[in-house]
Length: 152
Image (cartoon, rainbow, N blue to C red; front, side, top):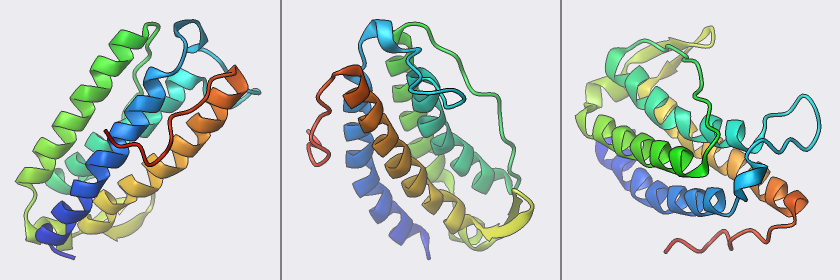
């Protein structure tokens, strides 16, 4: 997998991220700490987790080292949305710097080796999986989720 192929995939990912962000916009302000059952993440924590990997993955490929970081905490939806926008911007800025050699290089993450292209490919798994969870959270809150193919 080379950079041209990853960039094409991430072109589509931008639309998926837009839809995921739209789902976040639908969370009522007073439901950011909604948790369907213990010990799952709150709505805010779920959103942070979903968007954190955008930068974690690209930084991992750029540095050749996987470093998981503490996840941010938010009590206001406007602050969460601003942070999400920053994660998207930084993730794509990092992607622009990644080389074919970095995509081919093996990186130790979670106790096993992965090629760099897999690290940035895992973003799809993270976003789609957690966007689905957020859709369920919204329904439990009594909110109609945005149509998943609404990318505008």
